[in-house]
Image 1 (cartoon, rainbow, N blue to C red):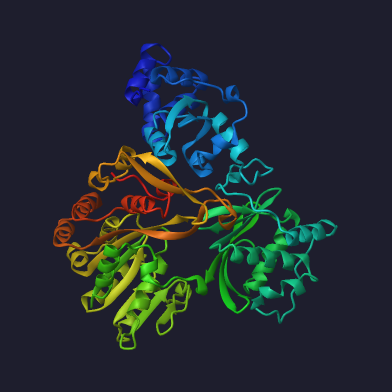
Image 2: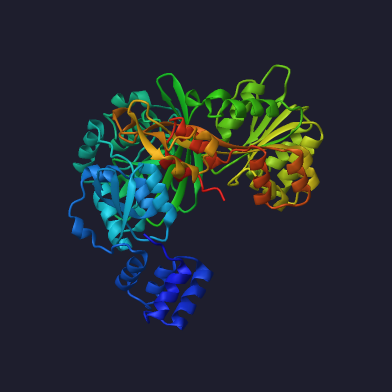
Length: 598
């Protein structure tokens, strides 16, 4: 297979008269303006048909251009070779598996990274054929299944891949009860309704309104499945329920659309919110009990075209891991991290997107530092878990209690250690710097993609370079990857040179041409996903003298990152790769969660 460059491909198309130079020039201008693929732009502008483009691309790439109908029904064994989420993300589908060779239909052969990633993921030889993108997407939906197909045909119907979970007898019973009721159900609550809802009373409440039972069942199932979030979403003719389990959304059985508004109203009553307000977003909190376990639900209502979307974050203190040694640090990283958080002053920044485990890392750090002779204050929005012996403050911007205002007060409270939930603005950043300069240890978070970018984010907030270099002692980027289910884990081999392309050092190969990796086959304990639980991967960047010099010079993030790598920092991709080699996670998870190092 020979892959032509974009320049070669388009020049050849002009040479043979498929398009003219003016059309090419206009298409290239549009690509520069709005991004996208040159082929898609040529097709959308009407300069060339998709069939002609794909046939020409196949000829120049020495790849067969096919119709997926030629392969008939694709076998389940072939489909199992490629995870559904990978197929969707890369827009490809396996069509034939023979011995150690997997034939894959792909719409864009210029995306060599996708082919390399697939080779590493499967450990097989990959043979590529070309097919139209829409045909591939239809095949993905046909064979992998979306789990939910919206009747209105909205693009929002596309799902994260997950094994479908069987509808329980309780759910079916409620559905039947609702179906037999001709009138639309409404929630009726007395004025003295308790905010505390005891989910263990579901059997007793089953004699009451079906909506109450439905809401309780949705929450109870989410807790039992160890979900972190519940998404309840309205569409034109249907609604959808999804649980985020181990960081991935899984579709659940959904209630009838006719009671959707009643479900939303019930949740608002439980959260002590205004049931009549449907035009503005609302946020609240629901407290529930499961046996002796107290669980908080942070609930958010968002008005949309077809009703209010509801998202509930499940905060279960009993499931919170506060042991630093269990979070995912390797021994060397943990020793270094413990040393840095024991510093008498300075700033420790934990970076990453929402849901990457930053709060857990900070809470675990505070727990290890929490002693009777230390005064620890935190300001958070929201306070997710109560930490014994630590003064925690809930930010309330509507009354002026912002992060900045709370920090100012903390400095008059004789603190030793301060935690700021997030540095969101210049004022909070400046007070955080001042707190560190006056002898306090400050822990906080930033939303950046990697450790080095935290420095440029502070610079963008107007913090002087010399203040950043003299106060920040550690920038830690992190993500969460799913762990392989230990009950159904199995091994397979992959070429060492493929792993080297992901950052594996030659010295780590010990001369081996093959390396052993692991994946979960799928079983009842992991609901067929092959994963159970999550673990952290980390990019730890302590402030060395060399990095401080670059900061003072105003160096860009990529220069700082390159120096940190030379000084021994593992990137997020390298950290995930090490955990894959240790059998803790998969190459698929590494590709899903981390970006390729540049």
